[in-house]
Length: 245
Image (cartoon, rainbow, N blue to C red; front, side):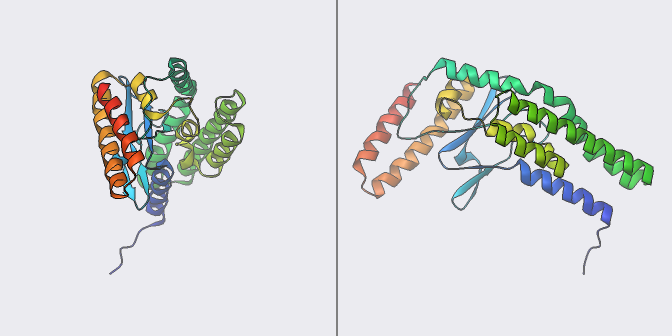
């Protein structure tokens, strides 16, 4: 028995699928995410994400498309804290460069997930659907222009900004992830632990350190199984440094 899905429902399912697919951030085992929240910042290690074979997949808060998400790396065998304060301050300043994206992002989200369904299911008419379509591409174009400007101002590599802008115009659901893509492409001058130590609140940093220690312990077990004594020594030193923080 097959369930019949109308073309209108197929359109909405495709929009949701494109958005969820594009919002996913792949992480390697030595990576993690930092994002501004309210209050403070939030951190996530790859080990906390959804594991798929050799990679990890993380989804940032789907209802907050205006919040940047930074992908940083760290080496469990090399813990160097506290790090350069200027690099962490530069990261905070970069997060502030996305303020102008909020209005078009939420306008596009409201149009895609509220006005368009209303035009398809509640008040189906050509005029309503064309109006929703015009708003969708208007907001997508607005986001694309902001993305290009972000690249021209040096906040993002220009090639990356151009690619994100083209994606926003060709597929409006992808435009909802413009800030996440631009921020994930940014390469801070600090590693994950250094940045987390600076931006996380005390309680959040304590929890983050505990998760990082678990990752170091796991790496230590693997090194011992491989009889890599030098790496075991480095990991022990790294764990002790984390314990001091």
